[in-house]
Length: 567
Image (tube, rainbow, N blue to C red):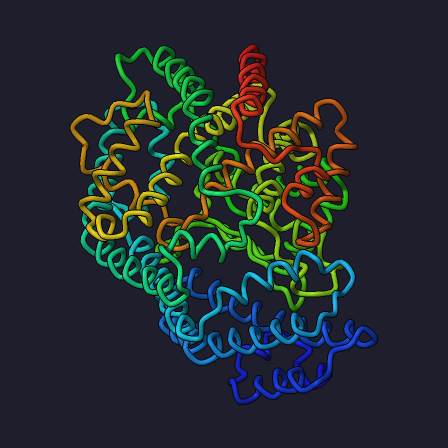
């Protein structure tokens, strides 16, 4: 079968279901036995790789230019005509493998995943899943077209970021007000998308005979190693340990700036009123300097990134019409990674590319795994790959080999990263608790006004230290500006859990850099062949939710901040 599939995955972009279906049917008809299971799995995996990569290539095209109607039509055609049929065909093959009783080598975790997916699968949900992806794309299009006029220029919301680093406080406030007012103009449009998503997600759960969408999504995300109660325990630990630390960081900023209270437009400026860090002039310089950092961390990681540059697997600069955010996706048929982001010349762009680089290294380290199902990595650990790389890269932001900064500037950048990381955990808790509330209280959460109210309550609980008075609407609609809530529901606690793992990897590197990086790479190479706690263990970390582990991380981070402040 496989030789008749295209060698170039891009050729597969034009295949219709009538061309694809015979390959699935051949696999359905082939017997499964221990002697030839490897060949059967290899042929199935090739099909899965091609389908997945086609999905990702269509998706990438729509994010590179949300106004590209042909790209949108191609993606819609895939979602309507190919994706549901492929999902159904894959489910038949999963069931065939499960019924055979054959257990391939290094396939225990994929088989566990398949059993859960088989239990969750409903034919009636296939068109709904396609529709959900279309609504997510609609949300991204609304966000991507938000711009403001500033000094005769049209700026995207991302391009406003450097202006929020201006030492002139009145300028920062004016820009912040303009950006938030523009975002509020789409309030009704985003609310309409949300109402449609809530209705659709309730139907997904009902069709699967589950009590609510959270129960559905928990299985869909293959969360075997923790529960909603564990998430609640993690949020409680954040309230106990992290909120006081985040408040200390906000207070340091307020005192350094000499303000009575911090306002939302005071969070990006340098607290000592030094000129904002401008680490690069264009995306090519960003690429080159990050390449130098990756080479210093580990030569093989550097080689992976160089191959991405040569293969044109990077699209980094912000522009109007480009979807918001940043991501790394894998093209499974060719075992390569693609990075998308919206660089505007600030330090956060450096962190983003390093972060997405960690995801890319996961793709390359696990590329030798033979079967598609072995590449399905728990997102809680996928984010250790990316966040761990952020921490591992910190010492290399300066230096003669292509560093971004002087030693003093690098210290500033690392302090910024560490303080942001401390402040991130409470924000993560807001996003996580909001989603648990929404899907446990479907009727209330289907009313956007109730969502505004709940978001405001959670914000006031976790995000202490910044004064939003007079800007209640901007605060209450903060959930509109978190794309994960709309596009990948419940995908956010992963960042909080992974950041805790990443800090432990960094702690190991301070004791023995070479061993810590070797453990990090070895854990990435395992893909999805072992359990989530085991992946953390191989990386030299503990999968945890408790105040004690969080407390150790906070102590390391705050001590490092204190040391860096001496530069």
